[in-house]
Image (tube, rainbow, N blue to C red; front, side):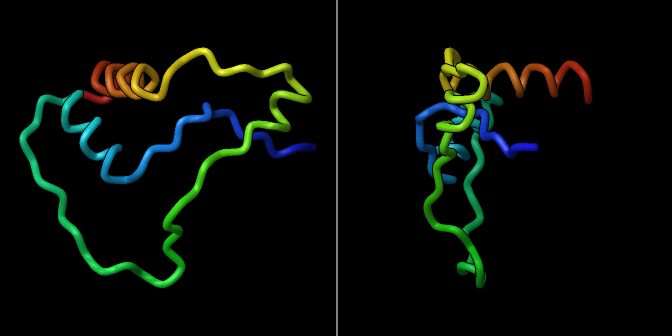
Amino acid sequence: GHTINVANAEGVSVNQLFTKIKTCLNKNILPNYTSHRQGDVLHTRADTTKAQQLLDYTPVTTFDEALKQTIMWYANNHA
């Protein structure tokens, strides 16, 4: 068996993600910042090399579009 990352090459910070989610939801909210916790990962990006090699995977959906689709799905299925 293999563990395979399915993602795109876009890196998104937690702050960027927060802003994108609040924009999609049309909410005017502020983040609640706290101290870093031991073990927090400050930077990460999915490596899709294995998916490309084994599955001929090429991302076609942008992060923003995938986020919008996810939020819409959640709103329609968990409202």
